[in-house]
Length: 443
Ligand SMILES: O=P(O)(O)OC[C@H]1O[C@](O)(CO)[C@@H](O)[C@@H]1O
Image 1 (tube, protein in one colour):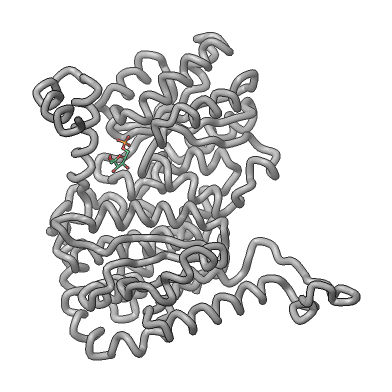
Image 2 (tube, rainbow, N blue to C red):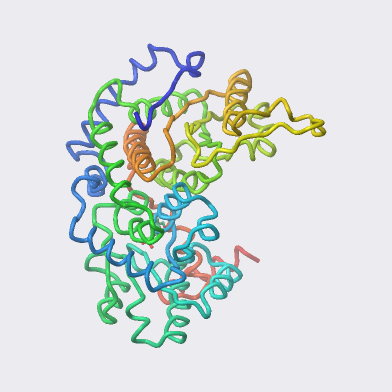
């Protein structure tokens, strides 16, 4: 099985009776999802997306990706949140963090995911003098971070390549009909791709939002979708053996026992952006109505040397969910060293992945002794197929987990507060009433 939940380290934290007691609630959450009767039911387009996706658009995505790979040294992807994280997460998980340095295809850079002028200047430097293309991604078409970066990069592209050529190198992924970006794209004749109405940002990686940059990175989107489709077949069925639902149940049981932080962990650094993707997925879905597990993340053994002390002995508020990647993309045989000057010959004559595994096993036992529940999500490897599989697993689990918590897992009203204040402080027309009040608070 590509992805499997392993609960063997949980026996001292959760009893069989507790699993049985929460099951009727899992059943109710499942029924709400399938009947589309729960809160946020207009955002359930992800549920059967790996089967029902737009095949004609999928073919256009592949064509656009092939063109980008042919005519571009650089692809800049402008987007934030769900319009950023999934694409980067899949690319780094499958191709590795150093894909830009090690692969022959176009370099893929992401921007519009902050308001840092330093970051954007660096992106400009990476594009200047290169044959570059832009994929601007925004469902709303109005997100400040994305729009600002896109405005600057579009100008650069037009200056470097002329307006006519620039128009052939801008790919807009946005709403089917509404929004400034859609209007602009139509007026300029840019190829456009659609963020489906019923798919929210954090559930959009398997739409054009993620698929175009992922395909441009040379990853098989067929494999990615096949993995997600197989995962959908398995995790859309109600049963006590449904690992996605069981994971959701575990999260809820632990939350009710005062474990208010979940740390998603992996012993592969290439998973770091998948951690970030997970944080948006669960954070925006569950953190509302003064409820929710705080989604945190670590890469081990790296963070064992920074966060390890806290996890072992700090306040007992967290549990750990470890994504156990069974087979690394590459292994490394450790040769013995004559003289054993570094004292490391006890590690020799085996693959480095074994050392990584022993570090994981030792840590799990130590943290369990420290009172931290340990959940394992086992995945064979980080190929496109299995990453697609994992994505759908987390989607299903998250939706169920949100309903178990009695929140609407598909909205994110809280995100507007910072935007409103920022606009007022920047003097955006329409926000004048708030400006003086906020400025007084800042004095
Ligand atoms: O695709 P858009 O509309 O630019 O939004 C980007 C992100 O911003 C949010 O709406 C939050 O501000 C996220 O939910 C979303 O993924």
